[in-house]
Image 1 (cartoon, each protein chain N blue to C red):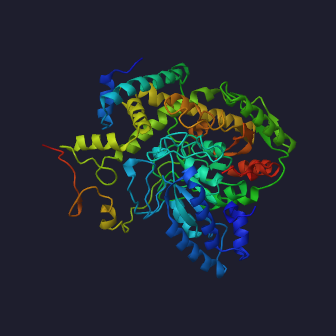
Image 2 (cartoon, each protein chain N blue to C red):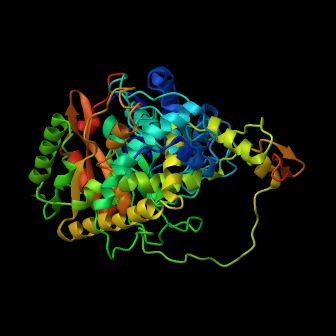
Length: 95
Length: 486
């Protein structure tokens, strides 16, 4: 079951991952090969088996909603690729 | 033993306490040794010499006033996936090449409270994805036992450095074997605690239900000492458990009388290197001599599905965790784009390496509409079966023993072109993460002059029994005392 270039491009769009044509070709082969190896799971009987969403018996780990000091703005912006005033500067989102 | 850099934590602690050596002398010795061998090993991404010497001086003044704990003044290397305040944390990726965290991971805070000495940040496979450290965006690390071979991964830098005495101990992280497999390849001790035992706050996330931080050390005693400090409940990690932490050094006992050990037959895989099998069989005989009851007939029938389960779940979780790298708030940012989506796509195209892209794509596919049930949900159900196998086995056994890896360290370049081949080197370690169990890899011999690791798996939150078995075996053998020829 080989993934088509169209499928690869669709997944890449979902993942916000830019890919060159060469990468798309390589991935369509590699992903197909890897996914082929996973078809073994089809033969496993999982009737009445619950998905293992937690490996430890913890649920609803909450804390009181207490206000506390956050990081200083200067520290938070220290790694900003582009900054404008006290904001992170981004490219156009809406036309 | 003639050089300070060859000391273990407990040996160095004794000398520091007796004031026979100072932390500055110890740290200088390690730094000089790093300078001597690092060009061959390449374990370090960042060496923090100035910080280390300053911390060593401070540690000495505390030690002088009698304020000393086992980790005080001892120089350590931290895998570059763990946030260290003010010190570049790259995760082995161009995406975070210049990222400087504004905070320390909880484990770092805990080690600093004991006045650890920070030597630097260790090389690793990019975002912890890999089994050889060849996926580092910067350079591969070389196995000190044979420089043309891989140290394993993804904590390859940490394991190689400890093996080469370029650090007294190190921290690594383990999602599918990333502490244990390199420890096995490098003849050092590597321990993955039970999921939830050690805080993940400040650990850059790869797969949130599988990741754990753990120690990489020269011997089992050192491992117990590090565990005593890093294992704890943390309010900032809602997956960390509020269970009491014992003193792990209390379980470092000789003799294994009364212990029932199972050898799951599915781990003696078909493609296993024959010398690795023989070496492991001899090691298991030693466990028997020490008094353990060995059962070669143990079985974990769902083992054959673990690889598929892991390579669906881990990439799925990774695709979500790595969505944050979009060039907006930190990290690599491709500015040459007209709109936000294009900027994100280009940032990720040029910031991530091939293995990371592969896994993001796999995970995105497995979680996408139309495929979620067949892949992700199915894998989660089989995960329950894998966990059940272990639960049932632990009704009969106190511990399980397997090889850490089916082969010894392979050559650089040997598996990098074939992703499936690379994934197969983790078959013995993956199931343990899937089930959330604790496990250790300890030196168990050599095959073709290359280290062979033995994996000991324990019940959830029963790290003590693993350390007991590991210590008893270690003290009856000499493997951990051998040093690589560099």
